[in-house]
Length: 332
Image 1: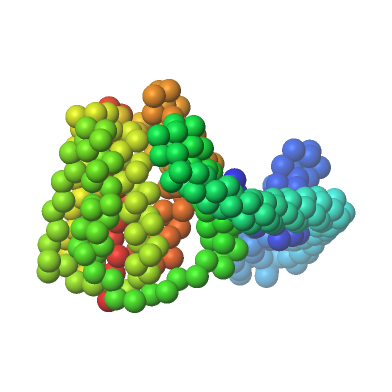
Image 2: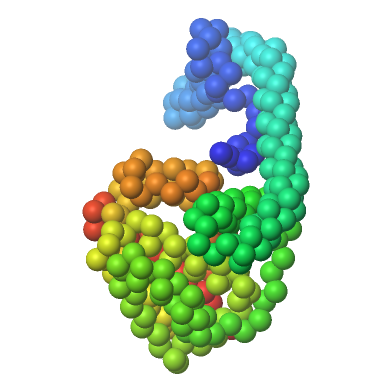
């Protein structure tokens, strides 16, 4: 979706687009330059001619004066006609621009209402869902072997993740997402995250490799949000990497930036889909076994969180040959 865009809708009084397909307007537009050039050419001819002969012959001087007067009158008439035509067509152009501005304003209002609806709905759902998950956890303690409760908790936690994504996305759009910046040590964060996800990766048969440079300088960022976006990228790599694959995390310094590369040996992303993955609610055309019922907001949030902390995120990928997400943050 596009929010407002950068389109210039300011009125242009004499825009050629207004007269492009109209015969009268076309003639007027083509003759307007002649209204300026023709008198100049005749003046140059007069100067280049034999001034002495012209002055010596009164008849020639009279004829030349008449010629200049008639030419000037004709070109002036064409100029006035062209300007009148353009002025007469100004009002329809203004009406079109006004209508476009009204339509654009309506689209913005609808977009704002949709964002408000998503935010309100997410808040309203979060409280009862928390109660459901809480009671389910109590029941699981009483009946630890009950598979139905495990499925209930898994579904409830997945729905909680969706709600949190909607809330974060809504806050990012509204510019109200809080950031608490401190000095952040990226190697330390990556080691802690690896401890969290390693068992899940091992369970799927994936090898997780970590390479961190202890000399990587700290950055100014929100450690909680950096952890959030790294977990999203690693979860993405886990989902799209088949059993037996490898996910590698590398932390290092380059020039005046601290960098994190997350590389996988998964299915990769086709070149035509690389821009689409950053779009909200975007879903790629992928095999059924890799579908996970996500909202399609994860990478959108990742990109916005990185940019909010003055960083950049880039993707290198080829279909069937894995992907590499590279993050770069300015050092503190």
